[in-house]
Amino acid sequence: MTSYINFTGNLAKAPELRTDKNGRPYTFARVIRTDRVNKGGEFEDGGTEGYDVAVWGADAEALCDLAERCGNVRVNVAGEEVLDTYTNDEGVTRTVRKVNDAEITVSLRGQTVTVERRN
Image 1: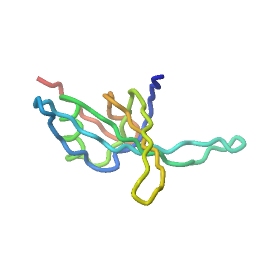
Image 2: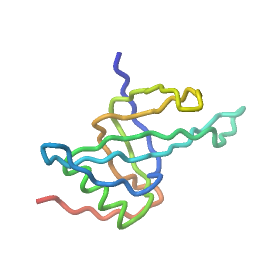
Image 3: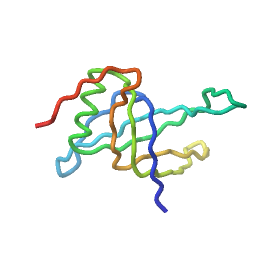
Image 4: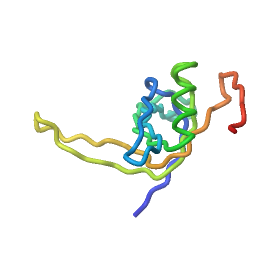
């Protein structure tokens, strides 16, 4: 079963641009989001979740350039969510949240954004 997710969060750090064996650019961006929890009519911050977000092609290039110039910006992420469970060397089981082939855009909330068309 495929699960599709759409959320807003912040880059945890500047992602690193890579290329696959065919020369296609890609990156894995770490994006952190915080849940808002309704506590009897009052909303407060809940737990945070980190996602490893896979971005390909010109979008990966643009994201890496943006993060290098502007830091840990607020982004919107949409794509297929995958939960990957593994056990580390100490025997602790962890779940990693991933978004494959994500569409990633810049959020306007709390930021000034300049848009330039790609050639």
